[in-house]
Every structure is written in structure tokens, then in C-alpha cells.
Image (cartoon, rainbow, N blue to C red; front, side):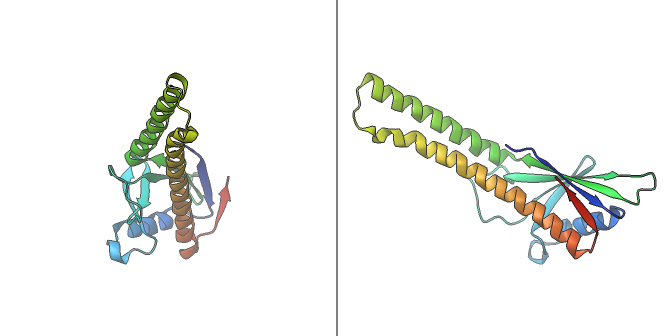
Length: 168
């Protein structure tokens, strides 16, 4: 669960970026350019995919959100910093803990069968491997979603011709 923070230094006021991000969020689904939806939270926005090709059950909302916050650098706020932070959604936590519990439970059953029942077929070890693979797939999808959202924010900056530097 990588909570890495990305920073962008804008060489102008944040208002133009803010307006273009709000326009994208408020567009209808079929008119979106960057496939971003979002909601306002204290001091910024949480953006996420408006249309996703991966649907998890149970679905508690977006799997990953990207929190966008603004900071003014100087007193007249002629330059700004945009912070992008990953926020895990409830769907991520449900899938994450299910896969982890499944792997631990099947590892316990596997160990019990091998130790106490002298189960000679080693193929029972595949059960926990499926849980671990599912766990890794959930993390891979989440990391790809975050990278995709960050690249869409960069596309908004490039489309609006806003000069920026990216900090790591």
C-alpha cells in the first residue's frame, strides 16, 4: 500500500488548473476528455476513473482515488504546488483483506493436512499460492490505476499549456 506523494511545481497560479480540473469533473460521462470523475474534500479533490473496465464484487466505490491538493508558494500566489497522494478506496481494502485472509486460511489448512494427516500429494500447496497471486494482482491493478491517474493529471497540465516541474 504505497502512500507515495507526488508534487508538481506550477509556474503560475493554480486557478487555471483548478478550473480545467473542475470542468473535467463536471462533464457528463460521454463528453469527458480524460476519464476523470471526482469530489471535493477539505482543501482539494479526490479524483478517480469515471469509467472502469474492471469491476470488483463487492463494489464499494472506486478501488483507488488520487487526492489533489494545492499550495501557494509565495504571498501573491503567482506560483503553486500540486500534491497528488494515493488514497485507497473501500473496494481495495475489501479485496486486499479477503485475499490475505484466504491465503492465510488455506496455508493453515495445507499445513494441517501435510503435518497431521501425512498428506503426501504436494499439490495442496497450490491453494495458498492462488490467494497470494490474487493479492499481487489487486496491488498491481491499484498501482496501475494510480499511475494512470497521475498521467491524466499531467495531460491536463500539458493540454492547458501550464508550465510545471515534477518533484519525486
